[in-house]
Image 1 (cartoon, rainbow, N blue to C red):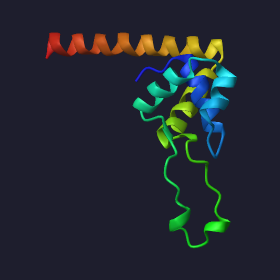
Image 2: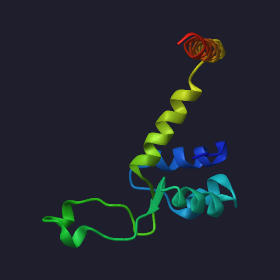
Image 3: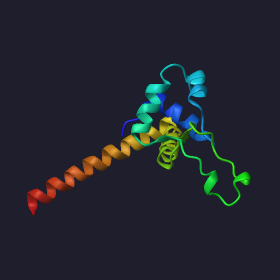
Image 4: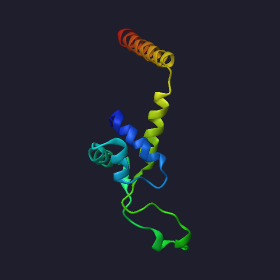
Length: 121
């Protein structure tokens, strides 16, 4: 699943709010592209619209706090994706080049090993 940087910014903003965001709030903050972004994120199951109230099913409904109906919430998958994205972006330039070098070297080593095994065994 490929998530564009603007979509990740919207998703990370939504995931920071425990009780969700309204689409008006998102439109005010990020502009008119938000409906397309929220549609794409919903299709990828990274966000969902809170549409069912759970208060009637609680023992003490007056003590529970829940999002407003119609709020946009991040799913667990969406929160995990934000965490992965933020961790990936925290690498310094030196660390990124080190990871690229190790990836290249391991690829070359694996290709060489495969060639040797096929050639002599």
